[in-house]
Image 1 (tube, rainbow over the protein chains, first blue to last red):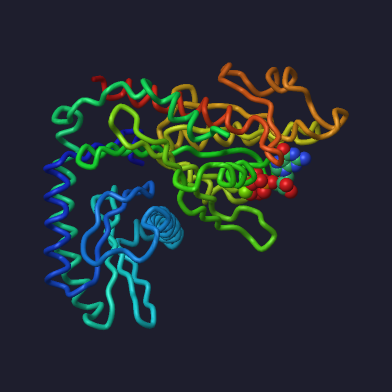
Image 2: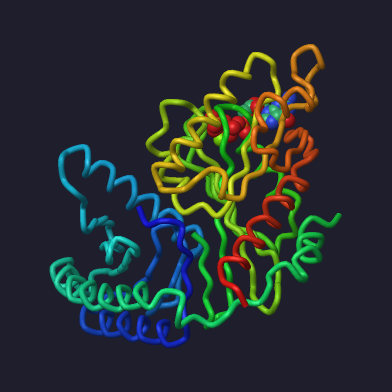
Length: 162
Length: 199
Ligand SMILES: Nc1nc2c(ncn2[C@@H]2O[C@H](COP(=O)(O)OP(=O)(O)OP(=O)(O)O)[C@@H](O)[C@H]2O)c(=O)[nH]1
Ligand SMILES: [Mg+2]
């Protein structure tokens, strides 16, 4: 697996990722795109305003993908690199990016799964490069995190306060 | 696997409630959901069987507020405790920043607790994580049951707490000891995160 590393998303990274997502949406005519990490955290999104709770959506996406990963292994496939869920009006296409992140694209009748698939394939390649770069850069380029313990007690109190 | 977003100045950590079947993991999250102010929590998602046993996980996002200028979020998950759900249990455990082990204090559940602790250790190891290094807190739940049915906290300490981690007697149905548990794991997770990314 991925080891216990934590993510840090710098401003530059975030901008480049969002640009990629916007390109993808423009060229595929899809409605919106989300990037979710394998533990279910939303990294970025682009396109139409989301009509649902993005946090639970992200956690279910990761669960969906990882359950399917295990199913793939059981039938002797290393992975399912992508998943397609077809609805009457809304459909979603999910694709693995560099084994760390999941790209989710929501689309409707204004486009076709063929076009989405084609364009996602390209985006996955570009995003994978971007993420590989980020991993390699590792901790070096990251801004420092202040001590998180100061003030934490107060906030925890407020959360649990009667 | 915590996520630090320096653009939006957000930190997100994943805390997993682990333990044998019916020990009270889901009840922990349900109680917390009911007590935390509405603006501090998101939707609770439960993937359960028709008999209310956890099938995949429960999920509850909490917002801790602003800590050192970062909006800090905790995502609480429960695993399915039943032995034969180990495949999904492993998936939920992936990327955990901290673990709360919810033990069932009932005397007849002692073996189940030990087995589940061993299972936690094995599943973490499979992900390359040493149980001694991940933030861990124990909770001895169901302390409200008649005393002839349960082990006292001191006995449970001896039977289960080999690593001398923080431990709390609790009753999830009435909410006793739950916030103490969550506070202890929160502190440990945040401390570890600060150490991992020195200022
Ligand atoms: N007496 C008592 N009963 C409890 C307590 N906490 C939970 N229970 C009961 O124990 C049963 C199981 O609780 P759950 O929270 O569903 O257990 P779980 O650990 O999520 O179980 P799985 O999903 O199968 O892993 C329920 O009937 C609860 O009401 C407690 O502190 N005291
Ligand atoms: Mg449960």
